[in-house]
Amino acid sequence: MDIVRGMYEIVKGNPNNLDGLRCSLEPFVYSYLLQKYGGMLQTFWESYLPPKKSDHIFLIAERRAHPNFLFILQNIAWAGPHMAVYIFCSESNQGFIKALLGNKCEYYHIIPIFTGNPTREEGKIAYNNLFTDYRFYQLIDATYMLTVQMDNFFRKKIDPAMFVGDYWGNPWSWSEGAAGGGGATVRRIAAMIDICRIHRADPNIQFDGTEDIWFSDRVTDYPDISFRSTYMMESIHVEDPFIVHQFWTFGDGYLVLNCDQFVEYWAKIMTIC
Image (cartoon, rainbow, N blue to C red; front, side, top):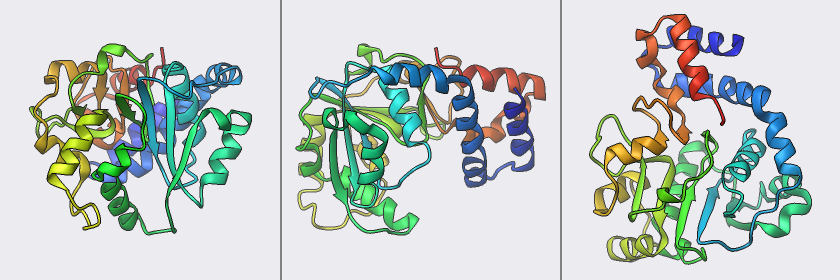
């Protein structure tokens, strides 16, 4: 609990600083998760092999040798061992990913689609261009995909009931009725191809925007907020979500809690069960 108490002090010192909280707290979150669940996930990982093909798949698009990568791979393995895994990477981190996977490599779809070593902003542009390009979705042999970013973690096993609608993600506190988005999103691949072909017919013209907002503005088939908030948590307080995406970014909202209440709630949210 000392790690969580340290997080409380950071939140108190960074009110109204979203980017500061996101960057400062993430190492605390994953240190806590590794300390508490790293052994359990490693034991599961040792005998785990994903299927090469499945109707529902995990999808990671990450060009960095990110420090959370191994935890994410082991966490999704535990959460959805029946799901195939697609990793879209770059030539610069492909070797890193293969080293993490070791003799499991052949069971993963590892696709180097990014090039170069861009700035943070250039990387965001490339990511948004990729996810609004219908040709990207045509590379995936499945019906549904669940996107996973390096600042997600899965608290519970995957529920097949999640895979409904065309697109949805974490509910947004600033637009609760929208389809949402963020690190974890559920996407019906055929719908993604259709939407991208209609609204971005020429993917060679650079996309200017944020892909999850773009999809959220265009989809009509998505579950309501009560369903979405059952499964995913980001900026809206949820008691027992399946998947969490950087809720610590919005940590200033928890300053209404005293230190003991803060520690109790955050420790609960950072429980893998």
